[in-house]
Image (tube, rainbow, N blue to C red; front, side, top):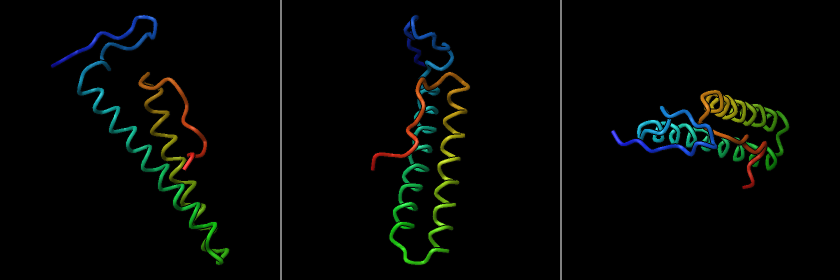
Length: 92
């Protein structure tokens, strides 16, 4: 197994410097990205529909995806795998 040395000033936990751990972290970040993209798509669709009830359902689903992304991110943060918070709303 290949390991890297973390920068001492960052205070990284050495167990997260393995290739496997970096791959797991990347997969979790990809899950976050999918949820945020889905939320953005649902919000866009909600803005375009003329049906108020359907728009409400779409916005609720978008909120669910944003909350799921936030939970995954918080899990990474609790394990010391990320250092900044995600944007509230994606730029796309």
